[in-house]
Image 1 (spheres, rainbow, N blue to C red):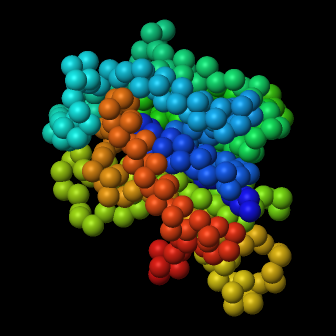
Image 2: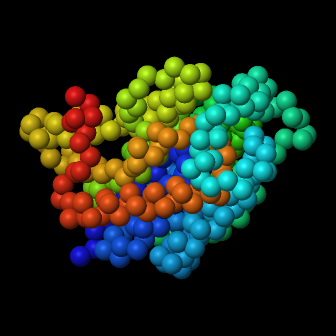
Image 3: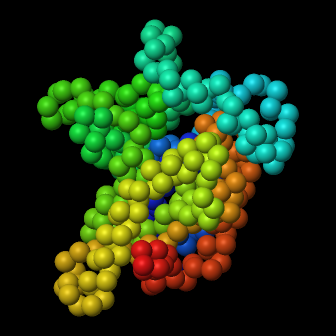
Length: 342
């Protein structure tokens, strides 16, 4: 029996390689059909690769497109770290990055220097990666619906791109961290005015509301790559910055999950008539134990060793979810929203 689900893919820079692993494993389950994907930042890149590959060549094509995307990401390099770290294995690298992070000259520079200071020398390092997407396939009717989230600089509101609106600029806007990249300017189709956009994580990481269309399934699998909880209070400057980043980029998701939980309670109590609002069934795939070992630094440095470690962890998390909850899809919610907001 085919089970139709929606995917909600969080952003988190290079940590999006975890989602690569999750999608790679989900694609192997032929009883799962992905009806729609909403994604932000790295989630938007993963969603575009998945959609384009699926539209062209089905499941094998989606796997291949994701592999190609992260091969390109691993080749981007990063001005924050020297080339000699490429010789390290993933686990020693994590320890090294933790030790060097508080003293990273780039961390200080990114807080003091505007991305507009580079003038004609400015280049967005993600543009060559995103330019290689087949946007004919990304915007095709075939494959899952795709929604890409960005934040309007002028209004502070979420903007969701879909269908033929999705372009290189839309995906770059979704991944535009304002202290690193210049805002992405996109014409408003209705007014013709140019509007500037920053990372979608500020307003929708990812936005869930596009998945509430009546023709889409009730089940939403959230692939969470920003830890929701940390037991210890951060005290080092870098750890404080890291936790602030996680809280900021989880806040919009938590707001929507709280709203879903509220609707579920109204429906269960009979306060709201069934059918008036969609009763979403929320599931989560995550690995908080791993993600709490990582930091803002590893989000910004797409080192191949760490990308493949994250992919493996994503596959393992997806496998665990399928073993424990495959039969729940379409029947029961497996994310405990009531406990989350109690």
